[in-house]
Image 1: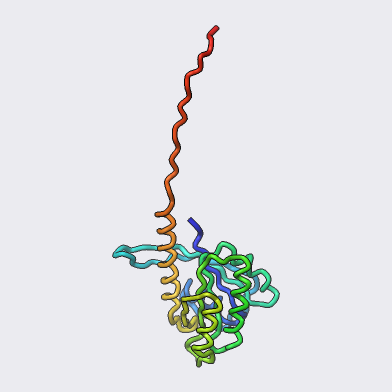
Image 2: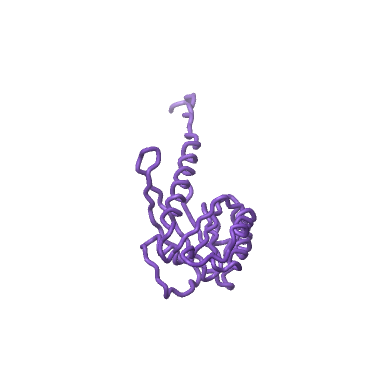
Length: 195
């Protein structure tokens, strides 16, 4: 079974680290500075599926959106199950840049789920629905969430939904694995001579 690796990518100052901080510890730090390099966390999400309590452990990678780290995106995204394409709802340029980030991610990984995440929904929106829909199409993303790392809007929903999807994917992979059958090798007795 694959590791439930989730990578956040997008421009600097879109709130990638703040989204993860809100999810991990329900904290928002307005004085947070731009991330440098990469950091990772893990957290288990709990949910009900088929009337049963279920859980999925998520491994979250927080990447830098700084120019000097853009070329490293393919190596960060390698083996990811989910890529969060994060943009700032109040900065249309960051939405357009999501297409660049998607193309960078595609260099390493095409077999994963891409989720478009518009952050800062607590502020006045400057990105139009039509612009967002266009980027969703370009980034092959059928999932879109508007969140606020500042007030927590939809943060838990985003990661719980991801956990549910990964749980289903892992279950399907487990169910499709065929058991390994080893046939015993029967050796014929040798006709040797004894001294």
